Image 1: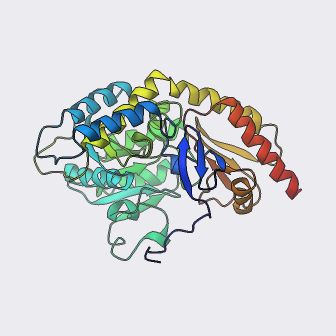
Image 2: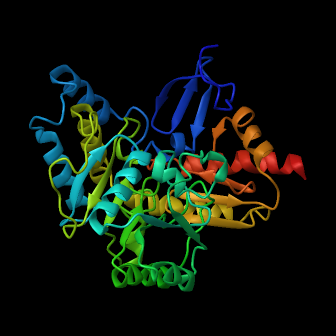
Length: 378
């Protein structure tokens, strides 16, 4: 074994996928309600996506950011229009962690400060500053711990203002719906108050939309439900439907200069072709509307199952909370019902992050399998 053993693996080997289904080496079909950590937005192997990437690869797969790349301009234009962030500028990278790392770095450049304010149960990535702003000491190495980060409870504006009053915070970074932490979210009052405090104390507000962006919640970005305007928006996961791409949208009040940020692979030709394809399919197939519709249907079904104590989240970023740990339930769903779901920091939460192409019959199939497994436990 030559792989560095850091992942606990299920004994399943996918070899093919189409839309909301994954097929293993034995030909077994699995319903994918996890999307590889919320990555698959427009469905596996979507024909538009495959065709565009194949064509781009046959023309030009890669060259560096030292030359003109019209695909980046096209992506910036289409993204800002479709996301209704028309005044923002785009910097491209390769992942969610990189997006948050660049967002924090840019905030520090912009303000001249170095401290970060984050929130309990947050997850922002595994790179230097991003992991320090993540509320999980198990994944923070000593070299990361030198970053200055303060954590507040989600929803506590008093604590936030007390931290910002010191004048040393460059950025507040927040997930408007927490992903790994367990689908927790606060109120519009809190989010608007947070935005006001950031303006008052000249602190950059970073919206971490890495998991919740690109339509997953039914809005293009999760923060948009609350009527606020972040200074920087980070994104990745559903942005490329499986092709590695990330980026930050930057408010025009933050100015660019040569060399301020940089990347070798970020915004490469294939990545841009992938993300442009995602935006096209999201729009043509009205997948944001579908996410809202299927979410409502999912909620109706969940309400009929007494073992589900709470349904968290919005759109197709959902969590089913039980009063028992779901580890065994999740395994049974995979191996007996052939359904992929996800876990969270909250041991009682089953995460649902399917492709946005999910339909009602597939929701029915999930709840039939879930009921079968729950009835076995009772």
